[in-house]
Image (cartoon, one colour):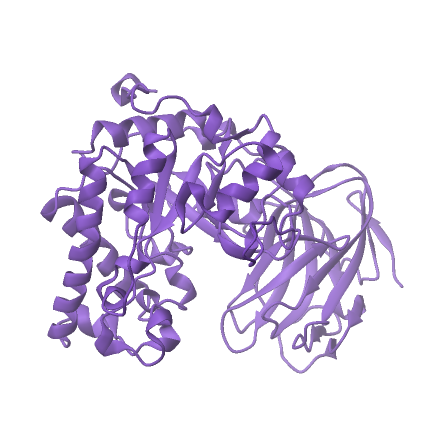
Length: 497
């Protein structure tokens, strides 16, 4: 084991510092406080040392991340409490990969690798207390070559990042949409709204078990237009989520909708009820949009017409909607993302134009959820940026790295929200780390309620104590704490608010 103290950081189980390390990193200005070579770290599972791929530093790199027990662990010691950036210099094998980062056994986030050559893969603003820590890269997707860990001091965050405009992209936005957006913008950086998906609405099992555990209800109800897709209606679906949305708004709550868009039936390759997945359809979005599949274009327009009718009902009822269509596109697991970013962006803009200009739907606050900067359709089509995060079980970190990444998808001042989540994060960590998500909205089912006939809380993802801590926190707003959004003041953006 080699040890060397440099810049106040002690690295252990690592080869530290070739000449010049510890100075500013070229082109970035950040001082590398420690460099830890992966080949001298502790391996588990299939991980082993290799040196056949060129471009590594030191004497080799760690390879073999292929099984669930595979990891590479570094031991470091920091002299003071603070935020640090962890750069896992690595190469991807066979395309884009993501892997877990653990600090002292707890999840700190995910790092991404895409370049087949050794390149930076940074997890930003990891909070470390003074003393020794075990920092591990553990297999999620696996299939990377890990060269080294570089540790630098993280940049300070400015409160200016929470200064967002309440002006909506739709110049004809309804007063209700303006009031809701104004409230969200006023709270941003100060409070985090609680949210919960429940396909049965506010009286479904998710809301019921949350109230039993905490005595409170979520401020936001998450719903899905999936069952209004014509191909599902044709197979017997009898949706009611539009009614549930109106009921919750009348109770004083906020409504968000996604749409797991079941495509037209002619494109099914597997069961009808899972046709929104890429692996269950042969739909070619690029061909539809460039004119090679004219019938497909017409069928998609008919699908949009069906959803527009539901949004019209909500507009007539005075319900503003946090509207999150075409979500998680960059992952590729849904058909609307399977043809790449250009086709996706074209569909997104088409949907925006059709709903806003053709149907006159001005009650929509557009929440973009493409989850990658290359998929961003443009500031004129996005009111809020959303990230969907499922880090595992009992992971209460605020996912600061993803929050900061999302805040840099555009130079415009856009609010960032956790539009879906598995675990409910610790609000104290969000405040400490500067990851003040505008809201969270936990997915339904096992993420909060057991899959039983009797409504019972499930601790599989969020333990009851953490759920209560979140809902009782002064930082988190619940349904009971919302103002009357029908009369909330409309922001005068010309006054510089």
